[in-house]
Structures are given as structure tokens and as C-alpha cells.
Length: 76
Image (tube, rainbow, N blue to C red):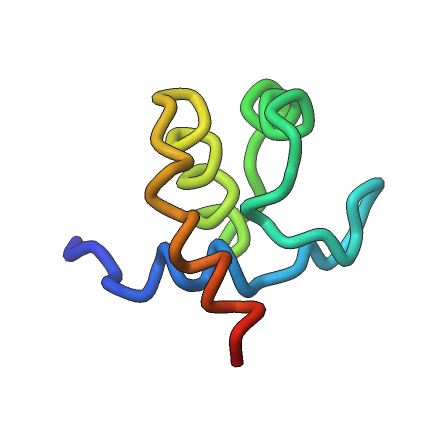
């Protein structure tokens, strides 16, 4: 499976569709919430991929990769 080049952009522009953090952008979800999904199981499909990806990014201290994309979200 080839990585989706738009994945990082989607993390900064896709809101969480349900739950405690409904409406929050995926990139802004707290690690504790992502850890809960890690334990219980990520949803299937695109949302699950996004949640797993942001979990790995945060777990590995790579959030700085999203900073330019988050800034561009506000300059459109």
C-alpha cells in the first residue's frame, strides 16, 4: 500500500465526527484519547487510518511536521 501524500493535510483539516471531542481536528486530539482507541481498537476506514497516524506522530514526537499545515489552515 502506497502512503497517501495528502494524509498530513487531512490530519489538520478533518474534524472528529463523534464522541467527547466531536468537532475537534484530528491533529488536536489529546494523546490520552488516542491511547483509548489504541486499547479499544481504532475505527475502520479512513477515520481509523487518520487516528492511527496521528497517534504514531504524537507518540514519536513528530507533531512539528504538522505546524506549517495548521498555520495554512488559518491563512486561507
